[in-house]
Image 1: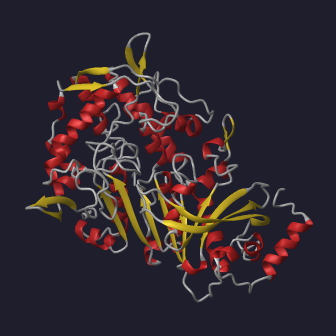
Image 2: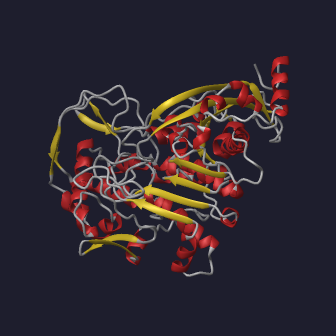
Image 3: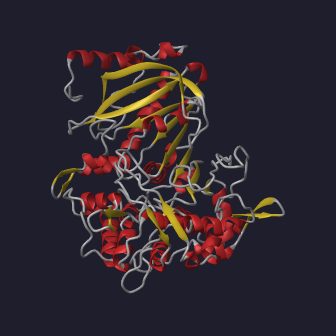
Length: 569
């Protein structure tokens, strides 16, 4: 049933939702009934242009749920909750958007609401994110963006036909869906738990990767909607970020060398070993990738032996997480070549055009070369180019608008990548770029942001987050010195680079720490360590870690993107 053509039963339920306002639920079982939730829905027209469908409400109680003990974003916990879903439509479109809310036991409700984000082209991450609210007494919400179901990603709904994007889907993915999720969710929370108008409801956002971009889309546009946000490794500057996944491919193509994966893994492992101690502590973690870049010469790895056993492949996610299956590979052994090291150096330098001007930034030294994708040709016995799927998806969907992924990169050059990045900057500046640097409304409303990024992120360059922090500092505090601006930001916006961490996850190549600095693996597991807030950097001296200001190191994170005609915030 379409919500904009209600049956008599639906109309009667709408009347019920408006008339019953005094029901009080005292237990989780009381809260978790269709009738109770329907009686607590916001008024059907409380958001202009949106109609809620009371008949779509579903509820079920979940007792003694738990999240993984090795979760990257919150500690192990056991909790019970009411899982409810609701549908709404946009007047005049005849669409349907699904939202899901986990409601805590009334006895454990802490006057808090949390929105959660997705990853890749998914706007929904479900069980991976929702526990981060419910376990702390918050209502936790998620949306399907109106893409068709909670399992449907935006790329499946965004292209109507060749050359025609569904721009409402684009805007929903860009920022609208999350604003609607939070507006509905916050009012529903107040109603379900019978909060007085004078009682403060604290609202938060949590997400990483695409979920991080979604978080910034809210903070940048709706400053007074949020009390706080925990935003990780955001995929903002969409056209730059998605196109740069193809950069490593073009490096191998331009240099004419397609390294076996094992050879690139050897370069990473040798880099970790060489740079581990540069922070003053040997612990298997490169906490100072900036010092590694400044003081370690990758050329010293040439001639080192590598060996990887043959693999039969797999049908699920493999090391290269963006591809559903991994192909069988032969035994790989040899010595690191100067050609492979040159590939590594060029990837770390970042994209430059044919005139040598910098276009975009790149990964940190000691991050895994996950974008240097090659595949083995059993007929020729050689390693060949494998087109990165995230980059190919972006070009097919949002550049060419025909849904046909690149099967090869014939004719594609560094200048081609530059053109794709800049054209996307123009076309999607108001939707997906999500790099507006003036956060004054958010700051004046009292909002706080913790922004974190794994220093060894192999999907979204860590320097991307540093650049955004720098953009906010320079735009909001133009009359202050660098250190004064950093101090002013620290009151409400803090950036943390997590030592050793990969993309929104732990890193199998290095022992990991969480944001509260608890070591998750290795010989120091369980120890608590401080993480320095940017621009301070960690340095161990006489057995004690200090957060130091190192201008040369800070400078190594900055890129002069002089190939782009407008500022890249």
